[in-house]
Image (cartoon, rainbow, N blue to C red; front, side):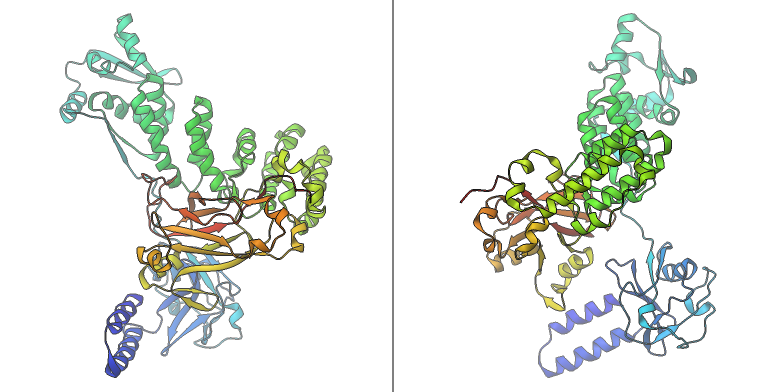
Length: 598
């Protein structure tokens, strides 16, 4: 139906005159009504297409469903009717806004297998004692851009690949045995051609066999790597190999052990593509632990950065409480952690400590609590925090010290804080906080609508640019609540004509601008002492952060442009196999110098 409306609107817009206006209205009315039948359903008010308030069509009018008895079975019926794989959540309480039409259904009782809601038991059409504040909603599953079965081909072949592969597969005239061992027990013997597998001058282990004139070689692998040994050995013939999420670590490890630098480096680069494909975080955490074990600093940073940028989802996942102490400490030491606020991080840390039980020692708790930046927690949140003696045991003193540090930061005058203390301690450096009032988001729905329709709705206005104004405090410290808030203007440029019409130079697209409108109203001594390391956080289909981009300038008003890489080749940190992504602009104030004396 949305497709019909778009075509009708586009055709009518090209007409002219009174006849056009009448035709346009009639066409639009036809488009709205054709094909809609009693029992049809739609989702309204959600940020993404997979979520929203449930509306059902009956007797010529769209209406809502009351959330009395609304559960996952009813949600499954709605989502499957709308051609989604299933339902994730049944939403109650009018979360997606209140409808304006009739409330058609109440006290639904579905099995979950019905064709649509009208086949479930309910009071009767329009029979209800509910208000629109009780409108039901759903969040549906969808075909994700994530695909943990995606295959990547590494091709280092310069010719004869197929013939060499056939030779390996046949085993004809092979003269060298590879003894595949798991836990010191031989589980398989693969016969290869010694001349071929020792051609690579960098294959240190295989070259050693030549010097010692061995007739076989032990290949020790883990049980989960055994299925990939044949593909690895075949690579020595063809210089081609298909790598998946499940095989990448094994291929990298075998290439590393055998001194195959080209394959090792290529597999390492491939981890960047594979990390977003696992929503459970099991692959990411496993790869990080592997990178620490192998001492690969590039791989460590690739994994850690992904975990930091997606820390909110990580903390909400089962993988969080299973992280090793060293991983948690290393992660919390970073400033590029993307979370709603520091209090969210502290709560996540409490969950981690509780899950460790007696295995979490006093020293462990102190070590990780030292990484919480208490001064970055809002004064009200600090007041509401209550130290849990059973959680922190005998190191309550360190917890209280952090609370005191936070209250001092929020209460003391700037002149007292700026005596060099703030420059020396990381506790006073904010992370990338996405909660209010530090960020503004252009949702993927906003971006898609603007890309194809050319309009953006914000605060009740229909705009012809993807732009918005929002306010933020001057700084995290409550001291700056005495001053007028900063008003920021942000805009996403998608088309070239937007740049030319606005007189803005756009080196590449998309581009995001951010400018403080009233920064100069702040006294000069404070302007010189605060700068803004503002960021754009890009999220793929609402599932994972795949890139964080700095603004070009971070002095004074926070700079004004952030060039967004179009793909991995252009500089994206991780791939998003979709054009459905959101832009979240984040204000990040930091102290830069001591306050100047008048």
